[in-house]
Image (cartoon, rainbow over all chains, first blue to last red; front, side):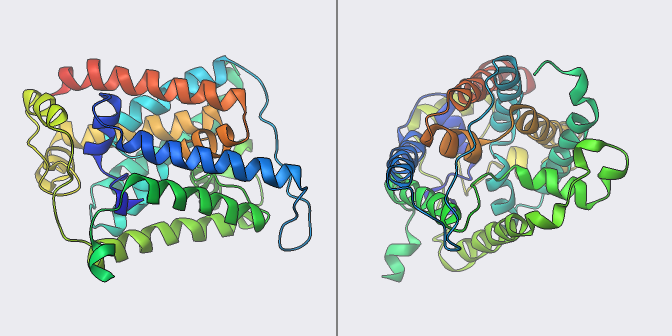
Length: 121
Length: 185
């Protein structure tokens, strides 16, 4: 991640301003190869290393959940320039202020857990 | 060889590595989803006593916490041994747009206006990180996944919900970029 600068706030800004292909290239390559791999795993009914079949849990269909939840996530992603994985990679880079964002993310996760029954899903 | 590793890597390398990580996790009987760790950490901290959502056997997710530790270690190795310390080479258009907001062109990986110590100890800088992180944590669980779970794993499995979530990521991201950032800076 870090070697292609996907953990950089600047790169995320560039992505949301549609001013470079870089991030789209990263995500696009991952999705194309991922789709191919997922297809092959299903097609040949591959098993994991313990011999259990690899199963894909289909996601439950809903619009508000993914649209609202996704939009809230996007607000934060563009603000801090880091989604959950890169947040932790930033610790390795000694960008200590990211710890504040991680505490925020834990608080946000906790609040969701506390009020989820009241939210439209 | 080392010199080649030190340079920033092209996008296709990183994209391929991400897909490889996803496949590797599948072959270990797991799935690729990073924000689940936030759920796990809340549970490990005892949130399950008060909120049912966190009442599960978090130890079964230890493998994912190890993945998280790996992300930190990977970042450290990359920063210490495989970095030229060069500024991120973003497009001139982005540099211009950001300087109009008062954010200087990159000197490293992150802007000092948000990740510098001075910013951290200002109310604005502190709140940007805290509230940004808060939205990420809340939104990721609400949407049932983040970039890894939806944009990569979900779309690779042709899941419509994941596509809706990614459209949501962009709605939020565009609002921050074009509405909130000009108001904040």
